[in-house]
Image 1 (spheres, protein in one colour):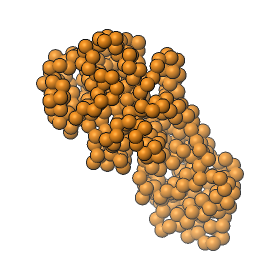
Image 2 (spheres, rainbow, N blue to C red):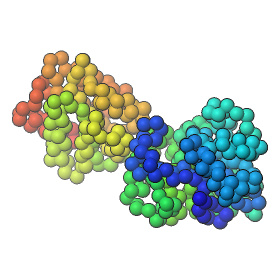
Image 3 (cartoon, rainbow, N blue to C red):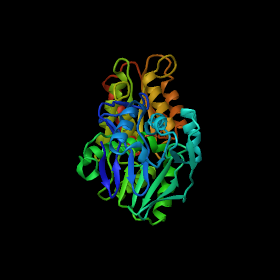
Length: 396
Ligand code: FEO
């Protein structure tokens, strides 16, 4: 059902309350999500993005009932990933003549997904469409934020930026606007979204923010494609992105480990105490990566200035959950963080060396060679692990 946003702009998207996993099973959505589609009703009626495929029929039926498909003049597809373009096949089946405005990469991506020759109109940064009543749409390409095809659309006359995934978050709410929702929940979902999706593109985020701010356009609202609309102080999320893109870190250390018989867990906890004793203001987070939501772990890595990663040695390597989180960490290309490895072993003890190589390949500066414990750690070994944690904290 459509909701009023601003002027003649309406939200016509879908709130997905029951979504618990996104991008297949890659991203946990503890608080659901929304696929935001917007309708602008000036002399021209313009649809900005659509919704995910499972909701295509519901979405198009709603548009028919509330707007009339015959009254839509064109579609702006800011990004072709299926959570935003998934209703296009149903919509185009019922209105095959609709022009679709998107980037050149958007055409490739939409054709790649749907194998259709729709009426594509390629736009570039600075191109605009007059939609009547003193309003126009101005396009800004934003490649790799977070796909090659991504663009933003600015509604001049309303000072409203349709930013697609950027500034979004997976958060289902009927409240629609940022000033109405729980601020702590909103912040948690925004930083999780940035940490897990946008971290590798941080240099591009910095450049794009500088470019858009440099345009000196008035900005009264930012309407992303997931979550709520930034109405109160919309620049707050832009400022946060600028901070997060600048090799963000807090006074925090994340300890990630997996354990077979609890020895490596005991090392992790002793090190956490050592860090706390040596650097009392430092927040320490300890995660068994086989048991903790991986996106929450990644968010803690993002917020940390250093990480300790632990695994016992198995088959001359490391446990699979430790390997999996390192693969995730490697892909996200964190910068300006220190690290060290630790773990128990029984005879050969290659785990630390394997972790050290993975940490180096992931861009972390190794604080030292790490901490190894032969067999089950006794009180003396746990004291050494504590002291190792304390020394590690003092190196940060
Ligand atoms: Fe929300 Fe990149 O799709």
